Amino acid sequence: MKAMLLDRQRTPLSLRDLPIPEPGPSQVRVKVAACGVCRTDLHVTDGDLTQPKLPIVPGHEIVGRVDKLGSGVTRFSLGDRVGIPWLGHTCGVCPYCRMGHENLCDDPGFTGYQIDGGYAEYAVADADYCFALPEGLGDVEAAPLLCAGLIGYRTLRMAGPCRTLGIYGFGAAAHIVAQVARHQGIETYAFTRAGDREAQAFARALGCVWAGGSDEPPPVPLDAALVFAPVGALVPRALGAVRKGGVVVLGGIHMSDIPAMPYRLLWEERVVRSVANLTRRDAEEFLALAPRVPVRTHATAMPLSEANEALDRLRRGDLIGALVLVP
Image (cartoon, rainbow, N blue to C red; front, side, top):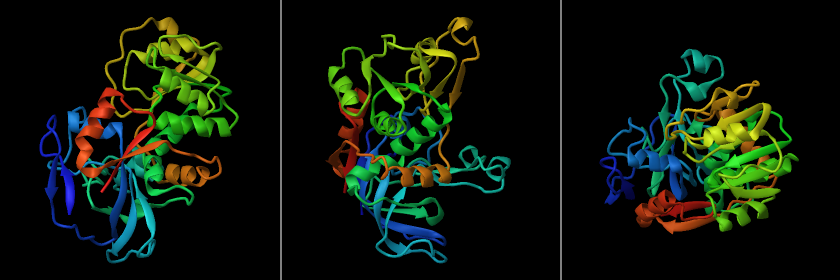
């Protein structure tokens, strides 16, 4: 099969011919139809995340059809359309797993990081960590739901009840979260790179009541703010924008250092919290909710062989919505 392989971090991916993988017990093999390009992939290739299996096939927003079943699989049938997310497996026995916090598992495996992912024609995954996908979205449009959508949903949920919501960094996750927030009756305020009129117009088209630069104050105090851009300097800005008792949720897996800031920004019971990974319950809830919104992703397809260019575009911020690789 054709696959884009990362041999060494901070080097380009290479297009290779690899053996088609065989599913083991409790696994499914999926013929990949589309795989989203996520900022986490960029952190893997650029060396921000330091514990990959190498060589590794990146990619964890995978959409495809089951074409072979491992022994013991009863959850899916041949031909079923499934999604494969970042969370590839958990141990099931550590304190976090036993408490229902499998996203914090002590011995997890992540797709496209320790488990070969979807920048390929085929992928193998644990059937218990795959999900049936809602109808009404094509393969390319569905791919961003598998991380941008899932992590965005968990980030929004961790913010708690709110009437006014700020979103810092209006990329793939934000453009999905904004639709969910509008569906829930939340006033959403989008913060983009200073002067990025195209992104601001995109945010308003998705229902945001205001859009401006991340260096601008919002026109009203915010109940909560979600930070998706991996820029630590946005944390004090977001804290300065939320009301007393407000919550700032950091939705990325990696971020540049948060600068020193005066205590007064945190005082009055403001909260900063991070989001780590996802749970299967998050996926079940969000994939049931997405058709009711309905979520419509803005996804641009690129050939699998152009994965390096797709990563470069993401690195430069040269896109609206999400990029998706198609074998």
